[in-house]
Image (cartoon, rainbow, N blue to C red; front, top):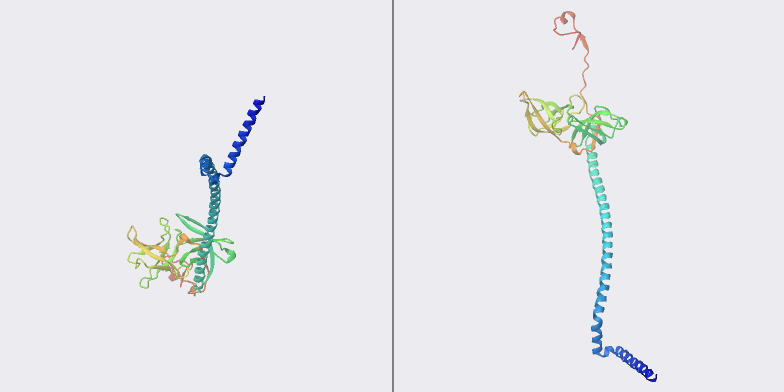
Amino acid sequence: MQQSERKWLTMIVILCTVLGIFGYVWKQRTQVPVVTVTLENLMAPFTYGASRFLEGIHTGIAIIDDGILRVKDMSDIEERNAELEQKQVAYDELVAENIRLRQLLQFKGEQPQFALLAASVVTRDRGAWTDTFTISRGSADGVEPNMAVIAPRGVVGFVSDVYEHSARVQSILDPRSATGVIVQRPESRIASILKGNGNRPMEPQMVNIALNGDVLKGDTIVTSGFGGMYPKGLLLGHVKDIVTDEEGFVKHAIIEPTVDFQSLEEVFVITQSFTARPETPKLEPKLIPRTQRDQVEGAKGTVQQ
């Protein structure tokens, strides 16, 4: 019994001694290189592994955060770009409208011989046998049928139908139209009719010109004033080409209009013209004496004096 107790006591003393030595060595590890190096070599793999693991976790979290921030930033940038693009479009449209309105105002001031009513093009109806459009002015604004419609660059057409707050305009490109025109060149002054061409909608023709008629490529074509619908001297276009009729009796002049009908947005209606027009003489019918009337072939009733 006593021997067993001695063994336990001896083991406890030895264990306390070893622990004391380890504690002393650990406390003095910085001063004992052999111990320090040995401990560092033993702990190095664990320290490196833990460091790499923690670094990987930190890097992953940073990448996720950066990705989330990038997605948010890209969304904000796209939204901002869309907003800026819309503002740029609106600004460009305002600039274009301002330029057009300035041109219209300048043109109106340069035409003191006419009372001009500005109107916007609302709808268009173009086909092989028609070329009309609707404007934003009607009878409530003083618009009446057969009023001439022009633009700063030339003649557009005439008012064919009128409603209270809108009107339909038949353009000079319409194949049903017939506009009295004349060559502006003083040496020529050939008069004819301008009609729309259904086969070539943008190229109206000056038709039925005599073969020896003095019309040249590049000639300026203006309204003749015949018929009373269009005032005389309004610009229509220029001669682009001259084509002889298939039968060889007459020729046609293909006209390039000065008005750009593809981009037409505003027009003017001529509500009144202040230019003097020649008065039409009033002729009274006169009865022909019976003896003379019987001698006139085809005369019936009265003739004009």
